[in-house]
Length: 193
Image (cartoon, rainbow, N blue to C red; front, top):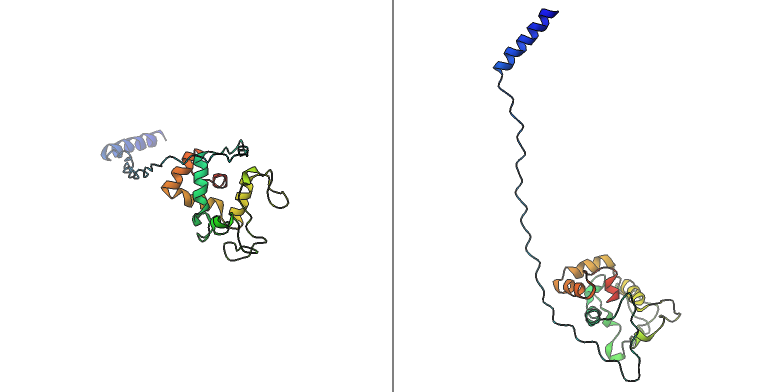
């Protein structure tokens, strides 16, 4: 058995000398770097208009600690109030039912929602809502932000995530949300505006 082992070893030695050395594995080619996306457009916003003065005889409007009233947030809310992009299908804005010339109310017995269905009631006034301690006829909403959120999803039929993404696709809106809230539009910041 020993000579066989020597023969195999010698044969292997001869074969190995004749065979070219195996090539080292080639490194995978380095992929070309991905192209750098163009920089986001820089939006320069004008200064937000100052908040209006408190009317004579009234106390300052209470401001929630989790959503303090600022000129930037008030301006953003005002813009969104008139913008149908805040609705499910881009067909309706808050201002279509809360008519300024009617003290932010509606002349209709019941108002139409996005999609054509009728609401249960008409649009109530929005005048001096900041002074209210609770909302809706039965007081079931504790904050104005909660009312805004309910109307946004109900009357305007909004999917909050989809609408927030659509607003962020508009450079000016994204910049306004970042200035007002320190972040782009989110399902939480839209009704807070």
